[in-house]
Length: 111
Length: 114
Image (cartoon, rainbow over all chains, first blue to last red; front, side, top):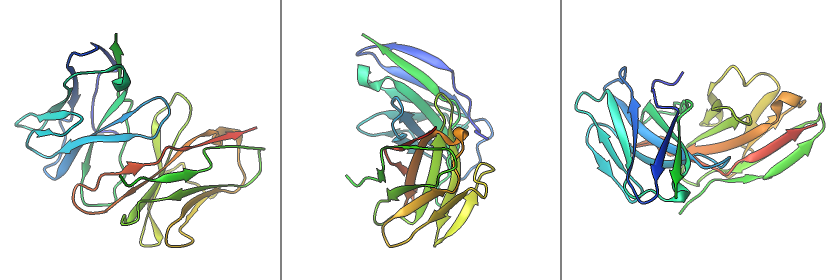
């Protein structure tokens, strides 16, 4: 079962930052936080991952609290194409363990 | 950028027929996965495959399902006798098995069982 809790849905105005929270209070020391998104019925798309430090790539930033019990995915300038379901997943990295997809957060970017 | 490719994109079949869904994982990846998503529901894990054998499978992956890596590039999911409830999107994924071990997913194969 998913080890994360996310809000069911969120709205964000186009051009503004979208901040998507995730709680993972039972995360283990060797588990990473991964974020994926799914646009319509397409395959899940990797966004970003992190262990302890904050991370940034061309798509998003990931802010992980010091106790690692929660994190926030930030899309700095949301566009209509960012409308999707966003999944926060915790997992040990270097194994073949599966990713558990919960229900995620349905983000709607509003013009 | 390397990608996972899946065929067919959409298959319609009659109940009771056998279906094979095909996937070409990223070439240097070692772990392979099948997931499915029934319309309006969560993405569900079916099976993972490593070193030519199943490494993990879910309760969904019963005797009707099988996976195979018939050659060095393809990874297949076979459903022996399809049921109406097998109608879903089936996603193949692969990962390196080391480092961040990010799963890369294909675009999916839509299976419709009539």
